[in-house]
Length: 298
Image (cartoon, rainbow, N blue to C red; front, side, top):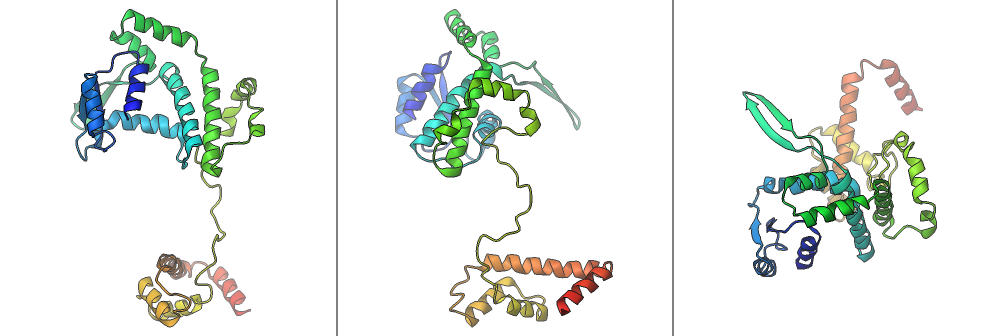
């Protein structure tokens, strides 16, 4: 935490006057408190169970961090370094080239709420017009802005995202051969048609195109389900938990514990749902039921 705070102080274009953390022990400890006292920083914390005290931070976690990093599991030193490279490029792209709205006023008239927003501007533009920078700091910020290329930054973000996606999927970095063709010219030519393919972020969590119908594990009730089905037909109100205890008592060699209870509950729920459909829609589909009955008889 001390190293992180020191790096933040060094990179901010304006002086840091205070630190506001949450209730985590990483912030609330003697080391951080002594660091803030030594550098004349006001240390405050959010109230317990009041997450809106950190609303601005949580907003950026959703609109920036999760949208770029995704939800994949990252672990290890190499993944940490790749994440740091993504953050370094994203800081420049978001602060210098991504405009956003800011809420100026909110007026309530009865049940109607009217919100007023300022004109969209980047964080750099807002900082330059705020008046909190001296001439040297403003000149340094403008000089840095003049050296940046938004397309090149976006290309670096996509490269870092591909690396993170590989870490989340396989636990290792992508092969060098796969990344040789991702130069800036190819990236620029692809921008004109990237919108046609939909979401282009490598870390985006894509939805399944079709429902999963296959099993990844052996069915633990493949041989005992006919017995369970007989119990369900004779005792309509019996619970899946009671059925699981019966199986454990009847076949202790197969079911030594009730670890398969959740699987049995799903099977019983699906069976009862199918029985309810037959009761409700059976009279409306006589031809289909007749065909099913003929197939069962065969």
